[in-house]
Image (cartoon, rainbow, N blue to C red):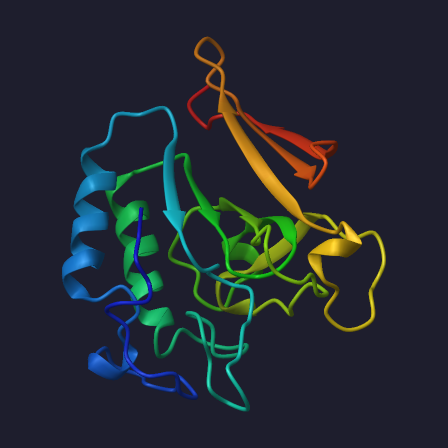
Length: 207
């Protein structure tokens, strides 16, 4: 479980080409702890709980990026930490890593592929996002092509106007299950009434 709030630098345009305090998101201590933990894990699936998404853009005002994204293009700014982690996993042969994220106000399953990415030194992985139950709902954010994301499932079937309050009933949460025998990972998105909206199963790369 990661903390991307306490150790990051100020929100900015995120154009740093070298890593330093201004490009910090996880911070070097937490980044290295994550890399070491994933390398040592023998779990069928390595689940990383991260409070903000990796490749879905979120801006705090004009050109002041709130999460790790900074717009399309090569890895810069806070993306340098993500690139470092992903390249480490590929180098170490760490497979079947899934990210469970939050912060944005909808639910989505996103697949990251190096064939679509500007930064290519990583293995494909999934990110499963479910936003807060107590906040308003808004339309899906734009994708940042640095790590090649593509949205495969999204909770909203059509675009909505503005930010809709929880009383409108457009809230979601996710449930992740891993089958002990097959090792398959299943993610189900549910609405605020508990009804299942989407379900998908991902097989581990090792079978």
